[in-house]
Length: 444
Image 1 (cartoon, helix red, strand yellow):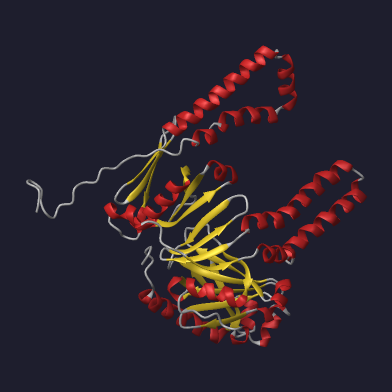
Image 2: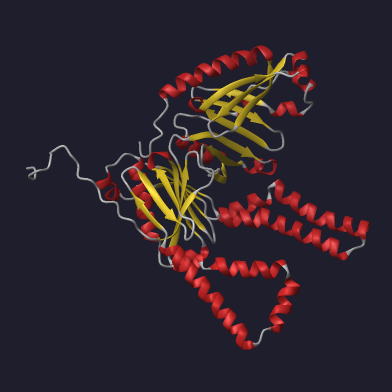
């Protein structure tokens, strides 16, 4: 039965309710005035020290009270003037104390909605919501929300992006996930130790300082160079261990979910159907153990790692969930360049190879650090053939496949006739692939 004066087919206009961030947010934003004072002191430490020595205890306490009050007022006002609201088609974020900024994020253009929980935020029970949007250079974020509110808002945004009606989207809730892979901490630590970059940074930290001492006999020069090198060596391994700790990959209707981090926990989502390229990386020292690393190119998204380290069979099983119907070709199935390619690139030409299946274009490169790139035919934006004078002399050419993520996968040093056939064949496969591609919509 329809109410009097209301048309049966007309949906009542939904009231847009603006919300504020978590009350703990002012403490985060209150650091801005304090940072200005610290920056002034660091810019001219001598003058800062002279000014401090001139101040009496009473004056110093007054200055401290003024700085704390200004910081508190700034944090409160910046929180008070920040609002967000979810409408039928977009997420609106209004920020700015003096200069106002309003972001209109269309739900259909959402690439990923990630939840990040830094260490202090985890202690306070809050989380940061980060949004990957097509065409945006940097992520918009809502920092901070209560953990339960952040998860509920993420689920609502994904449901709206999937096409659920606004009045029912908040009732859908977070889609259930099934765990596919978990990286043990011990396996991750061993993998980082066996990574060439770790040994390279450590070798530089041990070799460069003695050479500088022999050349300059200056302790300060050695310290100024050696300490950053040692820090870089530690960051390349310890930093990755902390960031990739307890790496878990799960499958849900809204894509693959990735949870990781020792101190800062991050909850990321790989959008379904939007992966442009999958790369299987196999460092030299990992081969004996049969380990690989899986990386991704997702258009408009910063997510780049799918699996930091895993046995090859398990990694390929996860890849099959990202690219349904795809089997990773065996090394023996990859076609190498002709032997005359050694005239252009001695020895290293043996590290190249290609294969074309019904679903993906596959290109491999590298002898010491092997990398195999898989590009779904539907994600190929353009195909190019290049041939310099030296390659033309030896009847060789390169075929470049450009993807929607702005990256290029190249089949190098192919026979010129084979390259021409590959160029035309791949263009046709890309057309038919886009026609039959799976939907890019969330939860499709």
